[in-house]
Length: 123
Length: 137
Image (cartoon, rainbow over all chains, first blue to last red):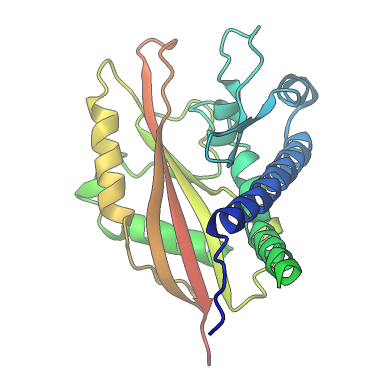
């Protein structure tokens, strides 16, 4: 009878590493698309103010959080949310949620491909 | 996707004497409210541009947002609007011409206030996931 070593820890580490890498790529894609949508919807002044306000936080579990706030020098640093959701006087110009939606299917494919490559390589 | 917006508006106007229609006095606007619109009111719109969705698939998923606003010294009226909006649209069934309506599920609610105004503006943004399937002849 042959015995196989499980190498569980190594498999989990490799899987996690691959998924974190893809999550980071997906976050970059979302930011890129959000900026493109923002440019197409915003007036020059507002776009200029928000375009360099995107951030990607790497969370402890390896996932990435994409967020956009607003220029700190402005009196309302949460300006991005007004732009995204709309206010009682300003029309909504969603840019974050459409970017997320646009990348959902692509992200799923990327995760699948990364796992496939990982396990084919290991086989 | 005019059929969906029409279906949403039809549901809104279905009962006028009570509920959400009555609470906003019939003021629900698509995309934007006219300048100087009387409070309270509601604005609804697709979060993802309709031009981004080609509606050639058998099944379509959209994100629709409702913004409710009230200008009142208390947050109570906005709270009432939010509650009646949820009552009207949470998991509702719509009649969408050419489509079978499968889902109208609330996903997120965000506060949307402006305390700089006098009296303050209190509001909420309510987001729904909508799923439609093409009707087969």
